[in-house]
Length: 141
Ligand code: IDP
Image (cartoon, rainbow, N blue to C red; front, side, top):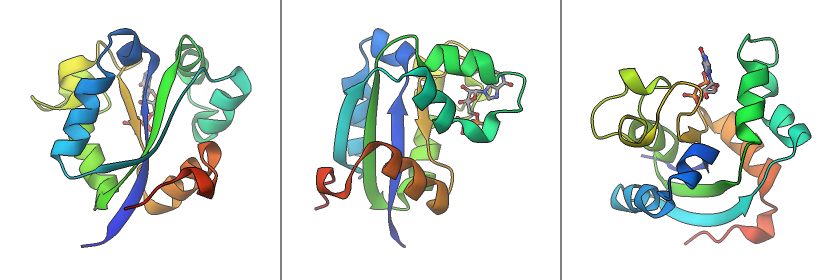
């Protein structure tokens, strides 16, 4: 198994619900190390750039509005198969379809406000991590 890094974002809805710690506990229990973290309030430009792959999708405008509606918690997770492991912990994009016990099933209200983001592949993980963290701010162990 490969040690990977992935970018995770706790979205404005979950930050507002005060469940950062509960979500962090799930990462830790799954063997994922939090090796960088920062709370930030994304600008419109940052949110649009981050979700640029979805620019043509009908939900793009609402997604950007939601992502800038409040602070987010951004972290780099590292561990064996971190990318797929985090996606498993997150559950399906639509919380109504997310498996019981996943972050989205437990904390998300809708497909628009679905609690967390996680990179979906090694290439996107590398790009997304570089969006938020310089190498010097990442503490692997
Ligand atoms: P993911 O977050 O599970 O990887 P993506 O398909 O990459 O899902 O979509 C990015 C984000 O865009 C989702 O987390 C969700 O917030 C939003 N989104 C995706 N599909 C829809 C939709 O059909 N309606 C509204 N929002 C959507």
